Length: 369
Image (spheres, rainbow, N blue to C red):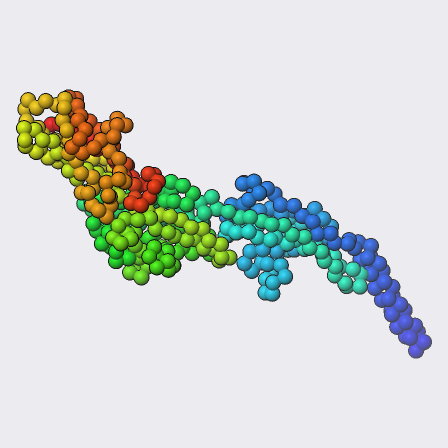
C-alpha cells in the first residue's frame, strides 16, 4: 500500500514535468520573434494630420502583442510614468491628437518564450499634427458698445485676412468708448481654441510682457488694449500648447470708416449733409444733402471728413475715398450730381500697417434731396 502511494506520487511528478515540458515546447513552437514595424494611414493633409483627426496605426510586422506610444503628453516611450495603449487583436489602433505639434510615435512588438522571457522590439515614426487655423478657431470683442438702434451689445467678430492676421470691425460711433476702455484694459476677449489644453496670451506692445487670457472674462485683469500710445494698432496674440509649441496671431480692431462731414458750398454758403447709418448694415450709410433750387448739379466740389480726422485713427494717408474707382480728394475733385445720387466708397486701414486689407470698407450713398 505504501509502495503504491509512493508510485502515485512519482507518477504525478513525472506527469507534471511532462506537461510543463509539453507546454514549454508548445509556447516555443508558437513563439514569433518580434519584428516591430507598422504603417500610418495618410492624413487629410499630405504628411500631416489635423487636430482631433483620427490617426490609424496598423501592424505590418510580427509579434504576439503590440503597444503604441503616440508621443504626446503622458504617452511618451521610455519616459517614466507614461503609458502606451494596447492595440486591437489584429494589430490596429486609432488615436486623435488634441494639440498641434511634432510627435514621435513608437510601436512596440513583444513575444513571450516558453521559459517566460519576454522579447521586445520597437519602431518609430514622426507624426506632424497641425490646425488649419493655427489653433485659434474663433475670436471676437465685446463689452464696449451698445447699439442704440437695437439696444443690444455690439460684438466685433474677427475675420481672417491671412493665416495669422485677423480684423475685428469697430463702429466709429463706438470708437470713443472703445478707446477709453482699451486704454483701461477692459475690452473683453472671447475666443475658442482647437485644443482644451492650449492657452491664449496677449502680448503687450510696449513691455513685451505676456498676459494669459480667459475667454469672456470681464475682470479688469483679463482685459486687453487695442491701442498703443492712444492710437489704434495691431496687437499680437500667442496660442501656446501644453507641449510648448507657439503660434502667433496679429489682431486689429479696425474702425469702419464713414463720413463725419459732407459739405457742398453753393453761392458762398456751406450746405451740410445729414449722415445716417443704414440700420441693416454696419458699413452702409445714407448721406442726405439738401441744396437750393436751381443749383447746377453738374459741377459740385464736395468737402468731406473721414472719422472726424481723428489723429488716433488716421493721419490722412491710411484711407482711400473713391467714386466708380476714381480717387476723391476733399475740396478738390469736382463731381457731377445730375443723377441726384452718387456712391462713395471708403477703405481705411489701421495706422502703421502697410497692408490695406488690415482695415474696413464702407459705402456712402450720397443723395441730393
